[in-house]
Length: 366
Ligand SMILES: [Mg+2]
Image 1 (cartoon, helix red, strand yellow):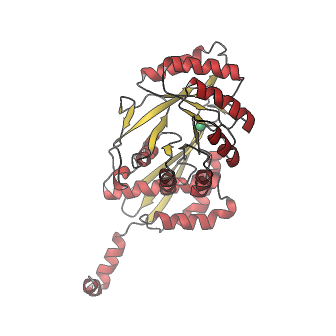
Image 2 (cartoon, rainbow, N blue to C red):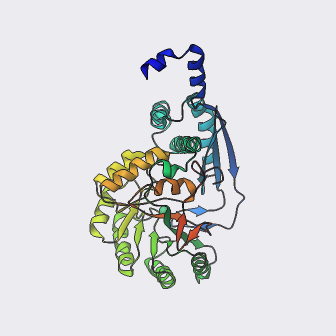
Image 3 (tube, rainbow, N blue to C red):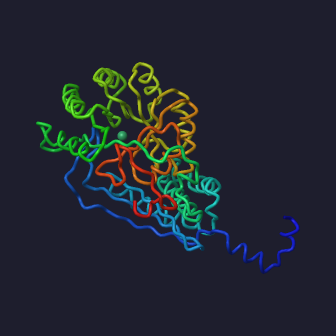
């Protein structure tokens, strides 16, 4: 082998180097969605200023990697992520070999940490990592879930359909949206709680459970510790499957107390950034279901490390949000229990979504 390398002529060495993958271009596209009728969780109004940024990383091999960061409610957010990608990440990524995602992650963290060790900076870093894995999968001719080593080829999913709506005091819109999800083939649904009184929560949960036996509950950080426990006891007694984000994400000690007090699964993680935050949450025994968000947590590379930490601690794993990026990662993890989705899904059989078969992350059309 050594002999062969030594015998390579300068010309063939150059040819070999030319064959190495390199990132040669970065393009972004900003999309602001037209406003639609809003829906609400406990603290957010969604649907009126949503948008997304799509990142395209080009290579010398003619392969392009894609990643899209969607934003449910921040008009300025996508523009900031686009600026970080265009002005900060472009010079750092051009010329890099995408076969080194961990080295690239270290470089991006080092160069960008003054702008944020979390927040929108990490949306940009995550997008770069997802696009890089899309390149690697396409280059290898394999879907990334197979490249990484798969555990399953289909993923149970649930529909986030139980929202709050304007002019819905009789809860007919709420009920209809759950019925619609079940008619699309879902076997599990998620509903929002905590916007109004505990009696209102109880009314909504009863409607949901009468329609579907598997109901997840999401409080979107609205409670303090005392109220989180009081409402959690009700959700538990009514038979909900998990209790998501009862507290602000920073209140790790509060999560520990709640997970100790309640038997219902505590689910959280969509607002945490990097494996360090998850390591803290897991060490404090603050969650039963760990929910990293692929746009925030750090892309495929970081997400899988978080998933492995959860697995080693005997915890269940679920995605925040759906789409092919989440599918490619969830399919590799033995502790993954659910992918979050919304509306009707192609390739759903018996409440499970079948694995994407295209090489890469299938993020080109996501
Ligand atoms: Mg949530």
